[in-house]
Image (cartoon, rainbow, N blue to C red; front, side, top):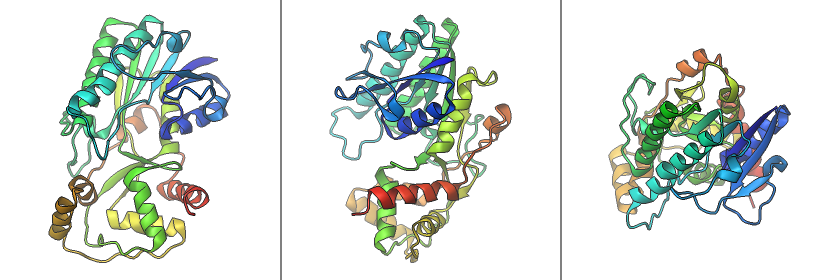
Length: 321
């Protein structure tokens, strides 16, 4: 029975991974959390308290005896970032923190380190064929840069130790517990808000959180996964208007879309300080996940429609007041 440490175990993705791996019954799980009051996490997983992630973090107790580490904890996008140096703040957690964890894990004898990175390592706008492993890294923001530098640090650690690393690069992950703009879109559709998104012609890749949990479980032990980098997403791509329609169907609502000039949407985004959110709505970002599907014989267990339906069920039970 393998022993697995999951960092960020009580987060959005971490909770799903804990529950998924617990159901298999073939792993001994432990997790880490920033919360000092949380001794037991999702699926009754015992938790280590790691108050801060950085170059000086002591992971020795958490990694001791672990066969594998799934590293999910990270500094993610901050809508109103008040850091004097945003890149330095991201690097401290995502680059230096990951490097420290991986080095201590290798010293402790961990055999495999699964790192959940991001599609943003490749850039913000994909080619028509979608991002694949053949595309060079071109991160454009502090988050993507910090994740890319972490990937490079992990590669160097694998060269100097016996520990294998698996790097996963997902796009936006959705599912029960999702936050941010995806949750805001659910709220707007539920309220019946008019959405000026009907004229957008783009393509986006997404990843249902249970599909991500499934692929993480596969990479822990699969012999072909060691020291590999994989882009991973749901097989389906969707335009922004089609995503609205699919969410509306899952919620049992009528989508209220209308066409609005795209250049005016961009102007509105700049004036409201939400340029990045608008560009994500307008731009295309797709993934070619053929490599992981062939290399690991991976088939996603859930369709996008099923994932959105489960997200809608959670939303109706937990968010609507």
